[in-house]
Image 1 (cartoon, helix red, strand yellow):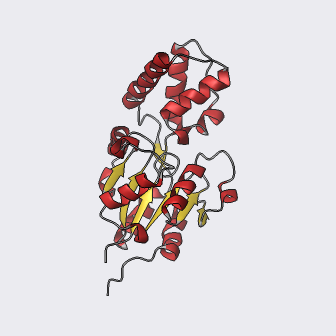
Image 2: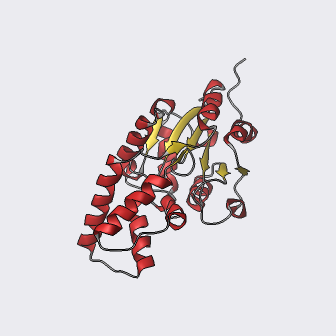
Image 3: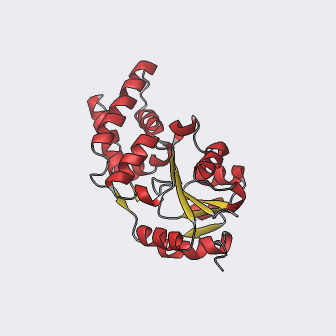
Length: 227
């Protein structure tokens, strides 16, 4: 029997990336002569990915741009963000300790995110977290993004796990919808980037601190029997 697999969202779940993403968004907007988006607004745009952040900022400014300009803005965003990816981004408190506890208990750990795989690996490398995960997958890894459940299924497979012995930990409606569609349990953190109270979306469990994660996972996805 394979070890159970715990798959994590990245932005707003493992790492507080909003400061660097919001700053990058406003650099791109400034280059276009547009006003910055306040941090508390930009923070809730993060879960949708870089392209959607730009689209939402343009909608907020009531500005429409041709497709070619949208591509240029997106490419500018990626370039600036890659160069400044870990200026202010930090793991959420207690995250490393929770991952250590899960690894010790025999869970395999993976990342399934709507951040490009290369950027995800770069961020996790900068924070010295990459080695904790047996798979790190983004929308360009398989050509699909959450909430398509197939990206979660393929992430689990790439980690060497099985869907029937896996679960997702995330912070948004997108994560909950992905897990439900893939028929895996979902634990939601309430300190992430969802626009409203995550509990209203009825995940299997809500946690407010990472020290509660190992116990919540154990209740929903028992570790392998090591007798």
